[in-house]
Image (cartoon, rainbow, N blue to C red; front, side, top):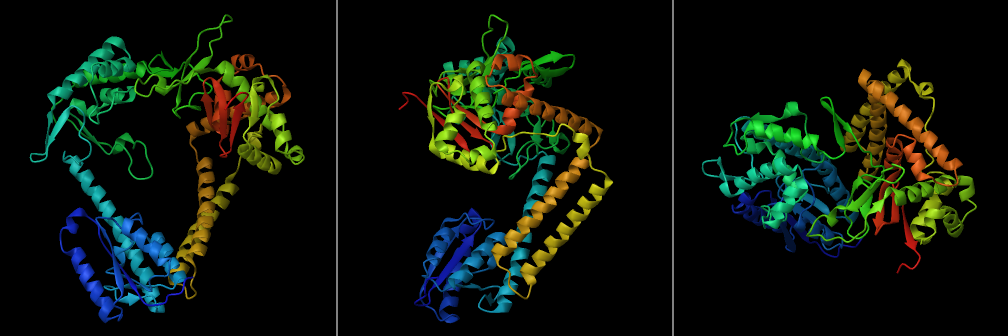
Length: 570
């Protein structure tokens, strides 16, 4: 810890909104805190760090970060704030900062709460006050959410991007149709109903020089958004998507729908017909009665990425072979985008299948006992056995060494051996009782741990608190997850049965890979349900990098990447 040669005060001031910046809040804080440093602390050496318009919900504030960096150099002996919630309203963020201040020997003082951390009572009061500061922030967030839901129920606009085809008057708070944009919404409907192709509509828009509101070219995604936007029918829909860290759609029962909220560009009948046609024409689905089922299963769908531009590779059906087999092919999505102009070649199942499955089979054959006798060079020789690898010169050493290390520990995650007898694992009521007890004990332990950390006689470090808390939370989550499995309804039980069948299929497929030295990919995929190898790959691999029709890297779910360097490659 650096020695503090003389006393110097770091003064931190903050207001949270742009409106407060223009008032005298910052000036009052600055004036009063400088006077406090001079008259109460008897220190005339100070520096003010100011964050106007930033919230204290986290530490992502420029002046705060600069101040902390300088505190770590030993430049300051005190940190002085107007109120504790000026520097943080998050308990974990503050405890991390305070723990660091203690290590640096810096005294923390809050003027308005009238305490400093040089005394034991001041330190205890600090923690108590911060708990209520964080509670206030959370309650404020809940109140704001409730107000916004209430506004939406009353048909009031809660802000955000104005939907395409409309203008918004802030004075009257009413929407009106933007005639220039509305005609392109109608044109999109006309073109799609005629050509049945979203890609055709996007290309037509780009050919006539039309730009999106952001000034970008149109894509299939932006056109699809135009055709599925309920706002165009005069209906205002709110709360259809989750906010915060957990993304995705909310349950439709939680949506707020206000019909006849504003003038409609598209009538309800035409909109509903469009949704039906879009659903019917979705790639990979075919109609059976009133339902839709998958028509084509692309085994490597969603796994391939372009090695040239990093874009995803879309799956399509390749040409039909003489024997009737029609494999899949994968091409970079940016090849279809005139602005991106990616030149990467497409790749077919005929190339991908033998390469990827032969490589996985070679890894599976390396047991932990065998791996302990190998080095990187001999492991590489074993992994590149087979016709698919004749053009591969070597595997990059970093990924190869990582793979060898975990092979020696037997922790690759690739030795997929699911139980073929799930009934032996079926738990009874005793397991539920034990799990409920385990969960209750964990919840009690969390409450006791928090009380010990905040109010205990002997100080517990933040690091020890967080480590112990994570251990308890992990155990509680495991118990809850297992209980959730045991309390599934009949439909879920049926799904569990299907899952067991799928795992057994993976088991047989892996055994087949191990027992066969040559990979007849076409024979394998034409004689089994293609969802079996597809599901196995998605559980095993993160993605496959393909460059100009060749596999150049495979990244596994455990984070390891094996990169292949081909002969003659620079």
